[in-house]
Amino acid sequence: MRIAVIPGDGIGKEVTAEAVKVLHAVAKKFGRTFELEHLPWSADHYVQTGETLPANGYDLLRQFDAILIGALGDPRVPDNRHAREILLGTRFELDLYVNYRPVKLLAERLCPLKDRGPSDVKFVVFRENTEGVYVSIGGRFKPNTDDEVAIQEEINTYKGVHRIIRHAFEYAQKHGLTRVCMADKSNAMTQGHALWQRVFKEVAAQYPGITPTHYYIDALVMYMVLDPGQFEVIVTNNLFGDIITDLGATFQGGLGMAASGNIHPGRTSMFEPVHGSAPKFAGKNIANPIGAIASAAMLLETLGATEEAAAIEAAVLKSVEDNQVTSDIGGTLGTREAGDYIAEILKA
Ligand code: NAD
Ligand code: IPM
Ligand code: MN
Image (cartoon, rainbow, N blue to C red; front, side):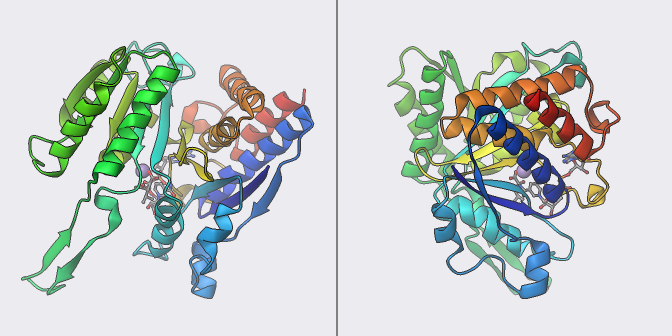
């Protein structure tokens, strides 16, 4: 298994080091070899060289079985150019149309919602990952004047909407789930989101065993907080999916807990924690590595190494049960020590 590792910026570097540590531990346990190749693409690299990623960067990535990435974002790059080219660029160029973000609570004490436990917080979000407002189509006319006009288009294509909705129903069917909820803003965005409405009905009709439900995105966030147990699978667009998965992460104990996959089924896919580079936390050994470690488990699972993935998940769960975790979720360990604890469980 050849895995490209892009630690990136800030705490991305620190949590990725722990995910790599855990990958080595699980490889040893199962007698496997993972060939890891570190790529330096980051704000540091950009500031020093002027290069975000090399001209053949996306082709290079396609040669790996999977990509593990930390986070990108650095105050020295205010226009976020390197993150757009490395992170969003890879999502677009490798056509990673499924952003898979499970929301899974490991222990009741971690949940900020009153009287909610692991049986209530157990759903997955499928975020469309290749279009929407993220395509950067638009422009600014008369910039920096009082007459400025700024246009940022939202792209919704039949192909893009259809494949993410179909993926959500396929996932539900494969996992014996009974409900798929689509969230949009079709009451206001009467063109692009009318397409989501049409395609959702069309796809749902092909899955008679699954109940399709719908909320406008504003109501959805309310119901996520009031009654998360009603959700099994949520499917939504790129921007709304970004926003609701930070909320979902807080149900799990915070941004440090949440994992994600940028997936094109059957092709090189990219795995990353949901959180960003948290510059204020960088270099302090305080970031929670669980989101990154769980993303590495998701990577293995996607590549068919299901036992290895399950072993990592079990070790993460044990570290939470033993409270051998970082301070954001009530422990006293540093990033490295929390990673060590999980790696040691795998070695035992
Ligand atoms: P952020 O996710 O980096 O941090 C927000 C807050 O969440 C932090 O201050 C911290 O309180 C908490 N947090 C995040 N990760 C944590 C962890 N592992 N352990 C404990 N607490 C954690 O979001 P932000 O501050 O909005 O963004 C910072 C930079 O990261 C920006 O440049 C942004 O664009 C970038 N970003 C990158 C990605 C990515 O690469 N996938 C994702 C989100 C944000
Ligand atoms: C995420 C991040 C990115 C996004 C940013 C860094 C562009 O927030 O992966 O959730 O909005 O997709
Ligand atoms: Mn985000």
